[in-house]
Image (tube, rainbow, N blue to C red; front, side, top):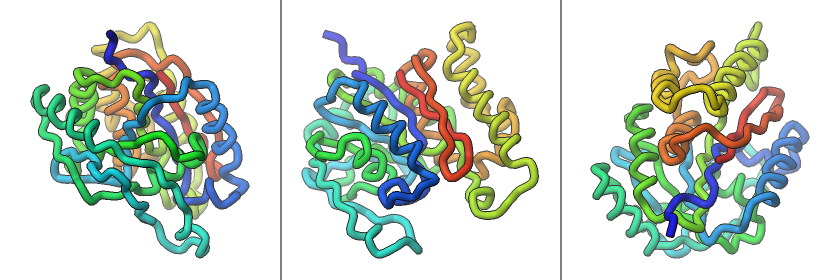
Length: 266
């Protein structure tokens, strides 16, 4: 029996709760995620790596019915009454902990942690019935790229059969550029997105070179620190790639709040 993940997705989750509030600048993203979800077999569970959870050591949610964390501010009142009552799966969380630790990486179980908007925003679009158990995985607050690739490699040793793995981040995350015009911003981002798409889908790139470039993205990618002043929204991709260990099967691009963003599917 194969224990590999059913599918792996790195997605760009949009700005806060905007995708769920009918914001026109996010409609193409909503349509894209809905279409991707409809094309996939329904998983038995989802393991989701969120850019919005950082811990001193990697952690997973262990509550059977996690609540929602409205980790944004300044939005309409309705943004704070969004519901998404997906169950957790504590037994799966415990199995992950044991398997990842056996692979040499410390993983803690957080029994009280809820689901943040990196989880409930994209999943409410993709699986609106909220009937698929979800376990959420944190980033390491050290934000070390190689460490997150290694976490993905450790996950590859776990039994992820019938599991959809989602890295929820944003392939462009310069917040100032979303709200204030920056000369050349779109051109700089377009060049970064092209680099990212070429790297993650190129069949003529060895896995050693792909891993090297992704880990060293600050120096290998054009306009790296303009597109990601802080890398937490890129690092879920590193976990996904470490797990997959091969080029993405498909890349999807769309504009979110006026900026080109990329989603990858394995």
